[in-house]
Length: 329
Ligand code: UT7
Image (cartoon, rainbow, N blue to C red; front, side, top):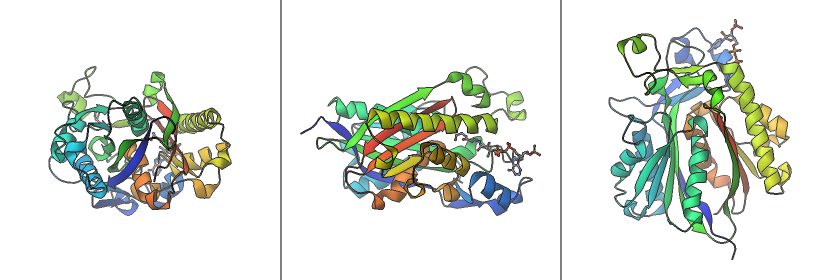
């Protein structure tokens, strides 16, 4: 028996029905399907429509499906952590709303905001509660309703983002499989390139901030692109070295789905075989905290017990990192 590790024992995801295609975006802003496909790799993204529906709606669907799939009751859950950058409201935490929505009455819950790296940061945090023996069933949700903070007249951002998310169940395992370790980083000086200007305590919402469109995502794409390639590839190399692994030992690389060109550059820099890189950006766009759990869910049937999987992400903050796990089932 080896040490207790936190293992992903179930995964589920949920994306809203409405699909925003590149063709529809062509009618909204000065862009083209060809530009979007070649510069980002995105063909479509899902958008959550409906009065009063926030990120918790995505999370509740993902968690309910997860519980059903695993055949366990919501009351068995000890803790729910939700990674999101688009909480339903400033407070309470979206995780609290999800807990209530699924009936996880015995769980405590809270949010983690690390932008596009949120799911990785939450997974690392959650794994410690399992490894320590404190809790036995922890759910990590990664979900975002990015459409709530996107300016659909800004062609540089509205083509990238979509809504969606997923959830994983973490449980203790002693056969060596599960979450191994990670390398996580932040650099707050990167905030100038990617942020939301108003709506927080530094600049609360006013009629002026709304008129100035300061509640939407601001992004200076090129520096973010460069930092993403550098950050993700260096974090992956650090985690490979930490685990005495060569890149060829990996079965899968699951990168945050930011831009197909970022994913291909990272794959080139670490020199991994293309077929090992999980990519579904063409169908979902960038769902921020949602990308990695959606990938896990879509590829679940291809994973075998013991598969060596590297997750990596980069996002606003800046935040970035890589996490290594071996598949538990
Ligand atoms: O999730 C983590 C955080 N975010 C990211 O990882 C995103 C990182 N950045 C990117 O993915 C890319 O920088 C973008 C997709 C945002 C932009 O692609 P780019 O190749 O860096 O384009 P650019 O900003 O350098 O713009 C090139 C040209 C510009 O025109 P000029 O100045 O050359 O005439 C833009 O105005 O493309 C123009 N452009 C567009 N044209 C058609 C920008 N957006 C569009 C558009 N359609 N949607």
